[in-house]
Image 1 (cartoon, helix red, strand yellow):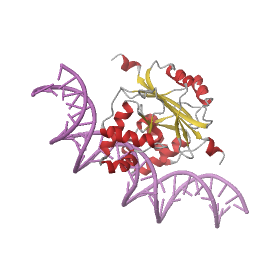
Image 2: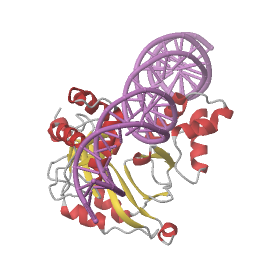
Image 3: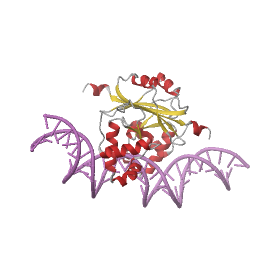
Image 4: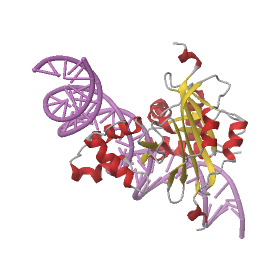
Length: 129
Length: 129
DNA sequence: ATTTAAATGTTATAATATAACACTATGTAA
DNA sequence: TTACATAGTGTTATATTATAACATTTAAAT
């Protein structure tokens, strides 16, 4: 198991505690009191945390959330639901979906090693508003 | 059917002719000779073109490609394959996949109106290298 | 013709991300 | 335990991506 470095730990903890995806500069602002002063320090930690699967990047939002799936060691098969009204993001952990996508082959004959899926819509709360 | 405005036409044409996804500032550079001078002119056209489904944004690359699918009027169900070596991007047009994803419901009870899927891997050419 | 909506042009600036370089800590293997 | 390699840190500067605000023009709809 990977041991997080000091900066990686600080940055993972703040993302993990956040109820919503965090943007890099918001993370930076929040960790300045802990001595992390420069964007690059944040981005380096983010890169590593993504690489080892502790966090995921929500590409359509340029934001990061902690992995919700304890068995997820690397970010090679990710799916998220995103509410376009309240911006709540949830990691989807559905074995039927992941099986379907992991086995998907298209006619171009590409060998896929990774995928990322983002669903957009309205969450339960926002539907009724 | 939507008629493109002058800037929209210029910007669509250059994306449509490009063999690979184009980034906004690369588009800007290429259309300066046609009188489009400012980033905002490009972004406004891109926004509109995405909205009407003439182009798609490849979120993981911050780049834009013309829609390959003549029946695709709006960008509400998109899937792409991306070669991580040569960066070739292809729009996937697979009815089994789109049916599966359009009908997908997860336990959170969200109502999905849109999805975007990106597969990553190596294309045929790059596998053999 | 008048009104409305959509698109344009322009300047400035915000937000996101990386390059380059010097240095420090940690793990590993002789 | 020293040497060596690898990963991580700190820092300044800068590149890249994207939007705000406001004035004006064009196109479409009544």
